[in-house]
Amino acid sequence: MVAAGLGMASCEKVKQVADFNNLGIGSYLTKVRVINDQLNYGDLNNTSVSVVVAEKGSPVEKITIYVTEGASKVKDRTKWKKVKEVPYSGETTLTSKATEIAAALGIPVTGLKPGQTYMLYNQITTKDGKVFDIANTGGDFEAISNYNMALTFPAIIICPYNPTQAAGNYKVLVDQWDQMEGTVITVAAGDNTATTFKFSLYPRASYGGINQKPITVTVNAATGAASCSNQVYGDYTGFDSNVAASTVGTGNWVFSCSGSVTLRLNHKGGGDWGNYLLQMQKQ
Image: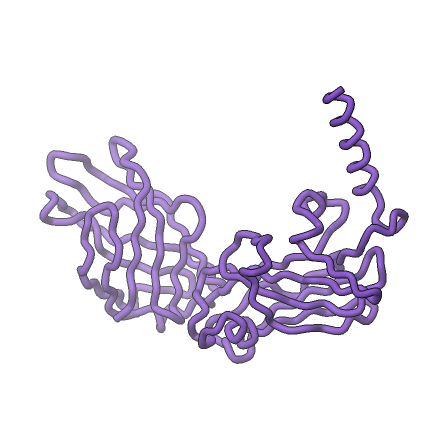
């Protein structure tokens, strides 16, 4: 009997997912096209993100946009901060400015964090007064690609790379590999190019480090995203030689506009010594 009951519940749920219009159970937004999903930290007073949406199901009266900090989709509405309301009229462009997002979060616009994702939530109010959003529509629906839902929209803060601006003195804030927090290094303007950032930090001399060589990081000029591969930076006497660094995972950035560098580096020579975080801040 339990199995039969679960089967019936499953069938009923599938029918509900199959066609919102035919069943008249609510309303959602489809994504027509993304205009821009990046906020430029170097132009915070003017930058914005935009997506064009269209209604499905019950006619939509308005869309209320909310925001949370972080890439995760939060279903608890009490965590959302209201950005604005937008009247719906046919295919509608939803535009959120960096200044509006910051105001909703209660921070100055410069408080937005380069490299951070801010999740926008598009809450629907239908003409008959019903409200639909990710909190009551369910993640299962949004995850089905055929619906092409636009109930959420991520905005990431990027920072176009300027090699001249990136030059200067950097203080090591976090160094999980050689524990050189507090060390200040100099990045020379002449060492950088339009798409590279070069610095010398490893190996630490007090750990037997010799034959130091610079690490050259490739930087996406439009976003500040950073990567490097097998950059040999030196030897550790009695430990390993020709040790090289390579970026791993996501969240590797060189942000010239804020002077921050975040690199998750794998260190490898004769052995693979693992992945370690390096963070530096321009002084």
